Image 1 (cartoon, rainbow, N blue to C red):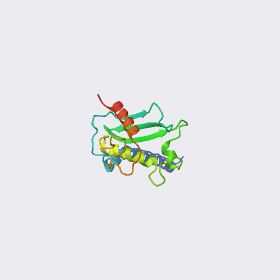
Image 2: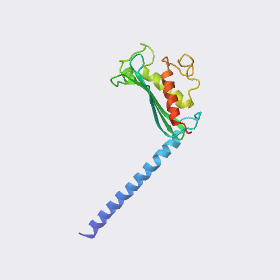
Image 3: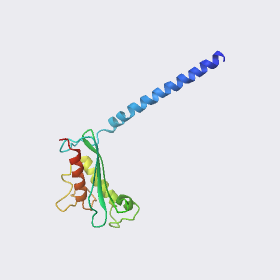
Image 4: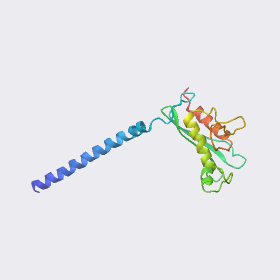
Length: 168
């Protein structure tokens, strides 16, 4: 081997090593940088201190239409950062998916079930509590626009998830 070949190979290896180190540095700072630029999910605080984690509640029995509600909350840094409320039939078909495919229609003109489910989840994330979400009849107050579904199953699921997450 001549001198130029060895130094060319060495330069290639050094270049690859530098690129690997720079790639790792970008990966290491990207998540904290993203979170800093995005800002907080909410400025509200939960009513009780919450432990970080993913908490799920599934109703023990299906409703009168054969759907079983499932609520999942994700807590990070002591606040609720994600919420999913869905219902599943006996075959495991998601009410959110069925509504998006036009197979679960509540009204011909109103928002689909998934959109309404997402709206109440956004309310919870923004406010970090259920207070003000629904009236005594189980339907949302004016605080949540365009939601016509009964949210008692959602409230029950969230309350159970919060019990699981609460730091005692």
